[in-house]
Image 1 (cartoon, chains in turn brown, purple, cyan, green):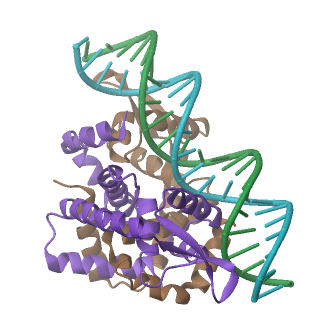
Image 2 (cartoon, helix red, strand yellow; image 1 turned 120 degrees about the vertical axis):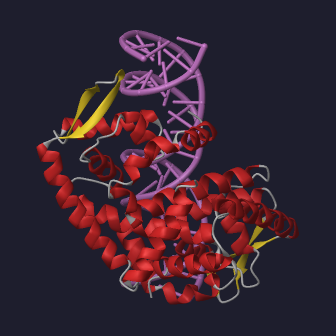
Length: 160
Length: 160
DNA sequence: TATTGTTATACTCTATAACTATA
DNA sequence: TATAGTTATAGAGTATAACAATA
């Protein structure tokens, strides 16, 4: 079953799952987090696929387009990826001319990953695509609720 | 780098990532969702590993322990797993005597997955382990905020 | 000595298609 | 004709260790 079929099928048959989600388990934060994230990933990847990007590669590109671009090590920590996975992601984006590896002036071991002009252009389009997809996913949330969700998630995502 | 080392390292060096998460991208709901879920998964799997469970297998076990246990198809839809993955998960739990496949009285094609007594006992212990881990992860949230988070996540996880 | 990036490898998870038995 | 479960297989994602260059 393809992911698309799965999503459609799950939507169509969602009514029949009401009894499962009322069984106590369906209110588990970790479970809701997993399910919400799975939906978000599916929708995000679908929205980015026309640009040849996925959520992962878009995240790297977006951070590389930041005024203060990250080293590979910082990408690894921030995105919770193993350093060896960052190598593969950056290799791919670099081979497509979207990012460059530049020597870190303050540490010759480190590479700063910085978006090219083409990369910035694609990042802008990717941002529009993901924001549109996100709006669809959060359509029932008011602005205040959206802000509240960001605050609560941030406190879990970045335990201080 | 092992997952444990990664978590420790990420905690220690989190301060140095402040500038990344203030770059606009760090407030993305989809990104926060991914990061919060990754943390939740890591903590949950760690808490369950002593019981020989992971978040995935615990979820199946918990649903099988429900008074109205699910069919494999329902597990597939609810957990957003391909039916073939459910086969493997149930095979594993069944080989350990934690769940049984029972014929669905209303549909001879379907299997109802129901927890054994041993499965229920392990599920109880798993619930304690995950709840404890979850409390740690959400330590800074008040009860009202926790309830609010559940409500908001549920509206994203189950688009009605 | 410790850290950054890299390579290689094994492992887990996910996606896809084909099959069977029932509906 | 469609659905539930199963099997097999390929692909994507992840974990682990070892290495060269640099701190």
